[in-house]
Image (cartoon, rainbow, N blue to C red; front, side, top):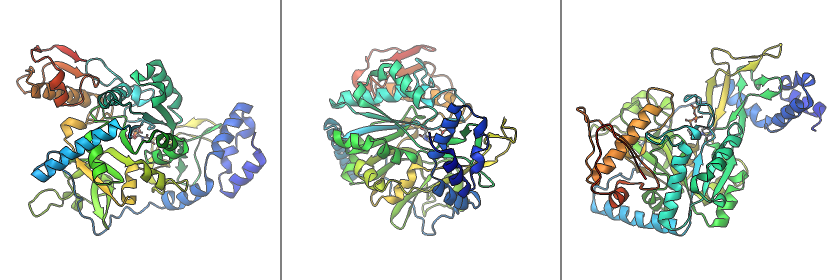
Length: 473
Ligand code: UTP
């Protein structure tokens, strides 16, 4: 076991020796667990972040030269765009056939807003069969591999709090059909919460308040876990990045992959046309020839509302956290160990021990949590590509327990998309007086991942009745 005297001395140098104040009350297992946590913390980095992010708030001043970025439209308007779309789809399919694409699902978040016990990926999310989010996404990857005639490896990022449960869930469900060697788990790193006096928060006598270091931690996690090496061994060139909370995502999109490749982009992103100027999505912007995302909370309102010469919203492209990364780009970013992404500050109420060693939960923020955001990799790339996508086709996340972006809105949007695919295939779907779909419909990702594919597979004589529950597989 590590030497407590040496650790106490090191902590004292960094003014963090309160972390071991209950050390001698603990049983040996508790002592060991606490020291292991302390050793995982980079105290020099924490000292810097206390100055820059706890005692001061990092400046969120946007650059003065912000311009909207070029965005490839979802539907091509001109023949040249149409030709590029077609070439890109072909190129994307070739890359998939050649086994050059990996799927990367980030699922290390805490899902506090949803308040679901267990990893968010286990949350039952679909309208008829209540498939968990992990299954919806894994089946998409499985189906895309079948379509390509070449399996696609799935890399799943977890965090210490959900790693064991996530692996167990995949094991119990036979990886949802994916072959064992094609599923690779990696666990992201954590950061301690820091109180307003600059002290790392001790949550219990034997444990520090640690939380995952943000989805930006995924890039170093790919490197440190050996996932990048594994990808290199398999000949993977492109990483299709998506998050756990959006069951409508097209996890493997040949058009997006192909455009990324044809344009020689290092990072690509999908964008939505914002519903209104202040919608809570990150804003795509250009500065100094580079693409960046400015969080909605950091975007000055006058810029968010600015319009162009046609009266259209100037910064209309909102980020939905769907990306393609070139493996070589992630390798170059993580070459020296760190990845150089900035930390963002969030003020939170974090449970901590009082003088008696009891854990108390404050009712207002008492500490700062620090996270990296994956989209901060965009300005580090010389070449980026932004592809617009259609909201109703690809975005309905499950973030909150109720209200916007909740299980209820996502179920509604899943049924609506399934109905529109069926209608495009010429099937009549019952609708109520307001035009809402009057049946519960779910389409398995193993059957179709687009309206076109469904049209080839669905029985043209299919009849759907009012209030029917229909699962197409
Ligand atoms: P969110 O920003 O919605 O955070 O994550 P969250 O932790 O899941 O939920 P709340 O804010 O506590 O309610 C968006 C995506 O990024 C992943 C999440 O798992 C989700 O897929 N994520 C987030 C990580 O993988 N690691 C993190 O440290 C944070």
